[in-house]
Length: 372
Image 1 (cartoon, rainbow, N blue to C red):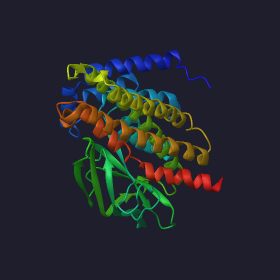
Image 2 (image 1 turned 180 degrees about the horizontal axis):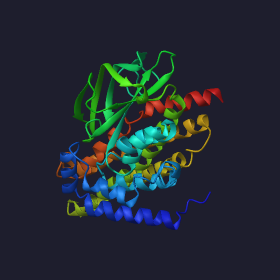
Image 3 (image 1 turned 60 degrees about the vertical axis):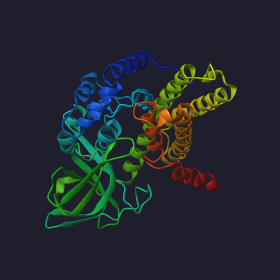
Image 4 (image 1 turned 90 degrees about the vertical axis):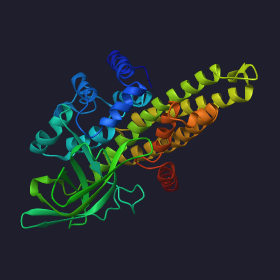
């Protein structure tokens, strides 16, 4: 298989690399984090102008028709710069669901402005008892008097605060899994906002007899589409982790070359050289798994699920390993906010928990091997 990038993909990579380097310094990142949830940032609008928001969507819905490799390029660049914009949670996951199942009217109302950078959305799929199982849903949706009534709670909804609306999974009366769009501020919905360990904006959404119009139901059987979109999200996360791992390795190597002990730079000590080699081995092996995930998105569902689960599990373990080594090789400095590698370490540790941790995905791989 030829893994060489096309001219267009190289141009995309170079453009994003320059943009992130110019607009997401540590100080600029803190400003973006402090302003999150108040209004669309200038960086997000720049993404829209450059077509970055349009790239992973098909031309049928106004996108640019980018594939798994294009998405990997974008996510790696965002990971390298630790960009806090909610590309995955606020655009990719809810946008892909809208592109797959929404009617043309629903897409015009919610997807088109999303791709233009006019608003962001969120996807509420996790519940506290489900342990990453998107189909173990207790939230209920009942149709009464020409309306839908939603009751339940969704936990760890990423980008909830900034979302103009939230896509919510709920069990309908037929027993199937439905998907509903709940605009921000809808009566009966309450939100509890917080930040994750790596400063990502998240929240819990409680629904108490939330009344929705019939056209707020995007689908009464979203299972297949949800599986596909979560697979895309996991592949995107793997690519983002590669970018973050690259930078963590580079910053650690630069530090041990500069920091001296006993009159010598730390990089002169063979034991520390071996640890840097181990970090890069984990990085390169994870890169191969991330490429596997990105190129598996068009496979049949069962094969896609197996390969992406394997990639997410491996990248999760590698991300934690590299985070721990980066902190230890920086010594006490690695635990401080002043040492920027600590932000990468926190993000890499949390990466393992987004869209299913290593244990969860290893179960998927084991089940597939048992069947085989």
